[in-house]
Amino acid sequence: MGKIIDAIACKGLPARDIKNANIANLWIFAWAASLGIISYISDYEWYSSIITITITLIIHIGIGAGMMLAYRRFLKELDELERKIQLDALAFSVGSTILVFSSYSILENAGIVPELSPSILIAVLALTYSAGLIFGRIRYR
Image 1 (cartoon, rainbow, N blue to C red):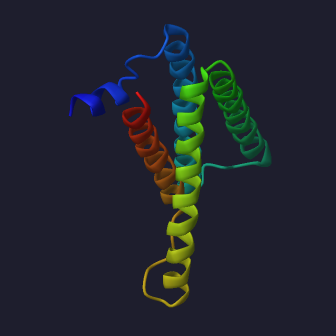
Image 2 (tube, one colour):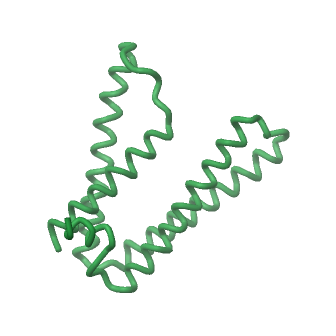
């Protein structure tokens, strides 16, 4: 259990990497919050004009761009081992998500399961990426 907690807490990573990870995480949470707020606004049809839609979309895209740049910086400044762990986690996440959703699509087309919400796609990506990081850090550290 201690190895799992150490992997989650990024024990053993240099302070620079932890700082960059925290900055990227703040951008990720800001992006997720903006997505949630925009979804909430659209559910209640508060979009009264094209200007409101445009402003919220520009803000969301701007936060998303900041998120991508922060994550890119985080990846560029990592050591080789942590970069490999990140790459393996990303590959696991993308591969797992493709397999899960292609299978779900078959079941959906057959009428066995209800239509899938896009928010579940984001959740599956995040969870499988997190699991990949934990497994990679346990394996290589």
